[in-house]
Image (cartoon, rainbow, N blue to C red; front, side):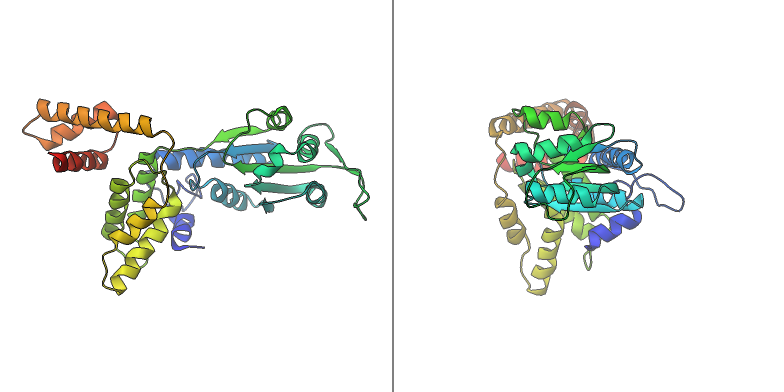
Length: 316
């Protein structure tokens, strides 16, 4: 468990654990934390047997889907089995059989199953019916029966929903569905929340400086929470080597690639700059009033205002 994960488990209600039980510290939550909390409620429905299955997806990785699912199940005292990467139809049938009573199966990044009729047929049977009877005919079953009643529950974590696959849609129709996505600003806001507690030898102020650097240089690259801790470790390393940490973090940012919607991002940047100039024109004597007017017009944070302002001043 990393330092951030350990701290989140102890005191951060927005990542996991969620809510405000006895003795639990409470802090203001970000929009992404609120969304993670809503996902946790869906997981609890499965954990408590009030739902048979959940399909959680989001094209953007690193937002805490799997971690939220697993920690919430642990909080609920539910034994979960994690299955990721590749699984054959026979392995799926075997896994369903051995975990047919009372357990929750978590399938993470097993997108290959969603295009396989053999896998989807097994999942359809496991997720619906009264009773839910799963069958499999094969000479490789060895000591397994060729049918059994499945009384377990299933959670899927995936990046996308295959849209043009009727067999998959039949499986999806048997699941609760939850989408976990976030804007660039929402990811940065949660990074700020985590950074404000400090990290190893770094103070909160030093961590927040790193977050603002990431936000100011991300451009249209898709950010994830997975970026934060490696970036902070680069700062610690750079300090021991008497180096500037910024090139190390920037090289990691540049490796992320850019979003496909470059044109949309460009238009958004242009609109932010236009509204900034308008706010400056309306409130030439007060940066605070400029910020308030700009944030009201864009719905973006004070920190984002100053990043846009800094860029604008650098261009003039």
